[in-house]
Length: 120
Image (cartoon, rainbow, N blue to C red; front, side):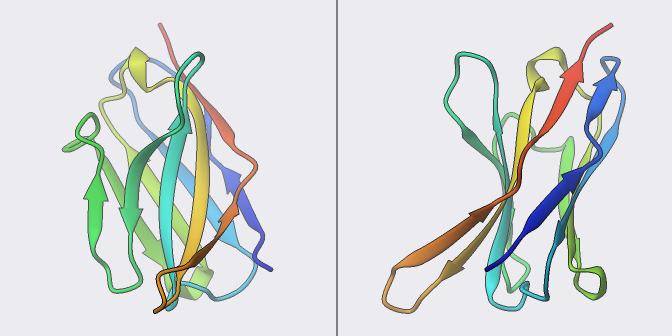
């Protein structure tokens, strides 16, 4: 089992910044891909950013150039640095850990979600 605890959400003005943190209960980054998803009211949950166990990163087009995903292996923590925030970034943000097996199967773990609200 992997527990993921998120923090760092809150209310921020447009153009502001937040850094979300996701602390894992054990060392997993060598074998798990880590990602941030978000879900806004009335919308599907969407992938925001992903960082793989070999440090490959990918971003949703809507956040490219503004958000950065990173990890600190020693702290078992993954981060999402969010800059130049827009009202449309308002959503519940979820941390995800996925272990992909060679067969092609996988297992997912999810954080509880943290609310990010961008408003003046």
